[in-house]
Length: 110
Length: 322
Image 1 (cartoon, rainbow over the protein chains, first blue to last red):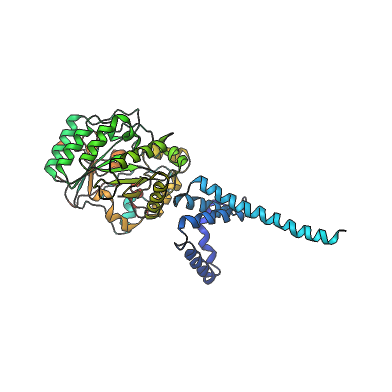
Image 2 (image 1 turned 90 degrees about the vertical axis):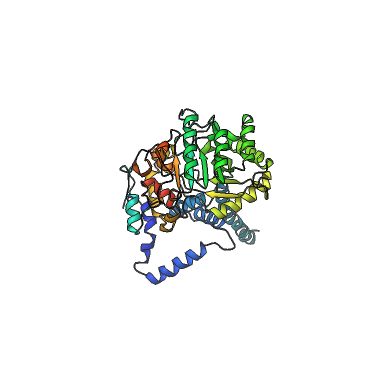
């Protein structure tokens, strides 16, 4: 295997159901329900998904939801802000754990 | 079935006529109600998604003689609507006369504008002619975002478009009860599919209203058609195959019944007839026979076969193209 990530693998996602069809069926039903219009618009859901895709650093999801955002009328400014939201939360999650470290250090220190 | 597709540029999609036949469909004329008149390829803009390759360097422009021949044809054919397009139809010297004659002949006249050509100070007279004849204005306004708009249509176009929309609103266009209809057209600014029309319309109405107080009647969200300058860009940017595959995989058999070529015909700047403006761009004559408007007795027959090629996938993707 020359590469771990290949673009042509994304459309094969459905094949994941070959060995466990019932679980795949339930997952894809749930997925389709999540990505249908609800209290949030499809455009808003795609922007959230794009941010999460960056947080979890999934190249398939980044590809898919970049296209999805554009096709649902978002622009690069909005998409960049969404990525910053993911970055802020991800960075903040590390930083806020600094308090835990400080608490432990305080307890151990004179 | 008339399919005049050239070998598609490295796109791994079935020829359009095979896609139709695999769904048990064919493409033939219903009652032809609309005459679309393309008055020429001259345009003040050079949009990157233009299927006609229109621009300031083009010289093809309808003469008065051809315009009169087209109007004679319209007079003997009793259309419900005349749809005037270009290029930028504002740049044809006979367009005001054309509008006046068309308005006297059919109940509904539509004028497609890129907005910047209509915004010019020298076009105040044309704006009044449109208003006086209650011509429906269909205006290109691809995006609420300056960068997306200008990457597609050129620098400064976003602000100019806003100015033009405000001028049209001041004339009464887009205002409830005025009888002056202003519709917007949004196209994707790249190699991706258009946003859902109803959601886009809601969003554009909210933001144009909030930021500039602009009103309009309807918004149409269309896919870009892989012809002309847009096709060249798709190939150059390495997006062509993927875009064609996306159009083909979005084929909606239910959209076939309502594609615009079933109820309209298109006449080019030199008076020749085509099934639609996209076949005109590709040089595929109506029914694959070169016919001048002066040779036509009346409207095409219901049931006449419509010539197709792979660009037709743009009109059948998702909810279609009208």
